[in-house]
Length: 285
Length: 242
Image 1 (tube, rainbow over the protein chains, first blue to last red):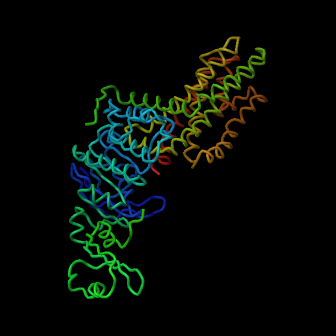
Image 2 (tube, chains in turn cyan, red):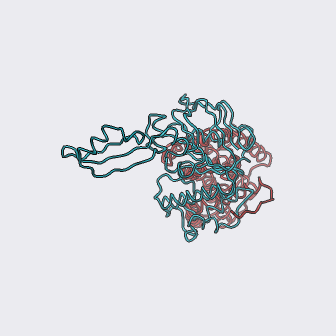
């Protein structure tokens, strides 16, 4: 569905070399997570594929055609939701969908079903300016998919949402996948990536450092651990030890024997651990 | 499944119509039509106090200011409000073409001006009016000033920034019109776009030869086409791709 080959991009004004020769493929019907900290190049890559940025080197093939050769017709086939809602604030939810939907050849008819999908049916006559951020993001989500596109781009789809709203969006993304849609997701939220993505790519300073399934990355590059919380010299302390060879770990045994243990927890490696290992950077949004 | 129904109608015309509908609704909900209504009522009340001789001088000037000055300000407000609400980014990721977006703004503002001007003139002016001259003059004036406002708005960061930047432009465009009072027969003044469009509106209430009308129309139309193409290029680079 999407093939990226040796993609390079330099911002014309600042001269910043934002994307440095990256390659990846996204197959039909998969959720592909593009992960990285702020400023790493994930939004730039997404904007290049969408066509909001031009003047790149390398290849961007989407829906069987080089991006440069697509006209605006491409937006009949792709749906985009940015990390901020793009909606007419003075119009109601329904008015927004009707107006924006009328730009598409594949204009939706049953707006109520769409609104119901994200729990906004009862608010359809309310002006968007009175919506909470979660409601705006949910409306923005259906705004981006209402023309039934084949490829969907979501930029930080759960950013700033409470767990209930985030779950609604995540469920809808999985529902889209079940319908065979291809989804390109940029996020710095590793939990979202673990839960949703078939493949993830790590980007840092414009370079891709790894691409694989989340589970493979965690098994190959992560480390399972045992975390102890204990009292040592009347001070509460916490130490984590690698799970492998724990039986022979002297420091671990000493704590068990000499100190008062409060809790013992074992944990698996997370995608965030793997990311930090690859890039040396924490995922602060 | 998302319920969908393919629309077989002409996509270009359909999208432009949809954009027009969106713009008119947006302008209505933002209170632009209300402002026009209040202003029109204010003009009507004032004009009712004047006799037709006075009106024949004051009305064309007021009716010229309506599509020009208001058009200049309104387009900036609309564009920057839409930018703040993320509508500009949205427009780029829909099939709506950039020229459809620009034309829709120009046509919707032209429509609102035309309605106000016709309403005031029909109600308040009792003598003969050449409504063909008036309609053509208001359309060409509105398109020109809206596109000028468009260009200034593309260089503005916020609504406030736009208002600061538009004032010198407004002075530059409007002030030469006052020269007409002192040099009514100076042909070269007609080369200034604002003067040319004022002459068209003025011609609806005072004698204006058909030849001069045609020359002014061709001149303003050419200017508007050039300005439209330039606005398209600047708008694409400045507002959308940045």
